[in-house]
Image (tube, rainbow, N blue to C red; front, side, top):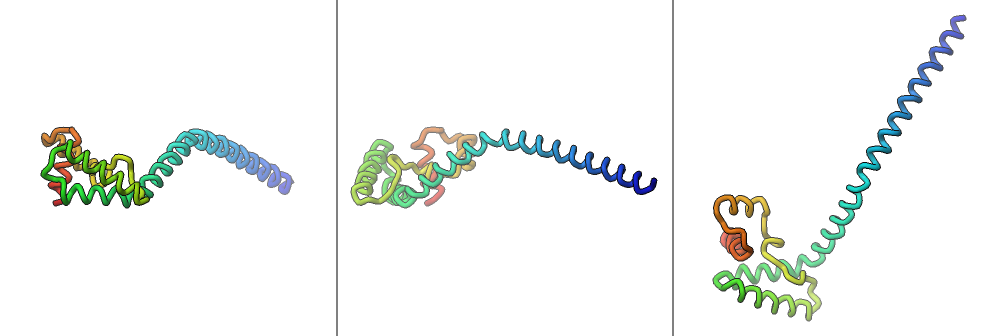
Length: 136
């Protein structure tokens, strides 16, 4: 009698555990389905980051040149000169972005946002000037 009661209790415990496992599996599948979009987003972000990493050498070179030599010049002249530098790098097989910017290379978006809150205009030329002053 006692052995039969123990066996029935063990069976009931196992059925409860099996039911809990089924519930966990359903919830895990729901979670994985919900994260499916995140997988594609992170895959895209990873490929973009990899591409930016490959072009980092040229972008830093152009940004360094802008910091060192183009600070006192107008936005039009800066863009023209940077275009010439990018063309020269591509000619010499140095990987770089088609249009590198100080904001993308050296900019800290949190600091830039704070500068905007403090009154700095949001145009690229003003932000570049802020980056030049901050890094000088």
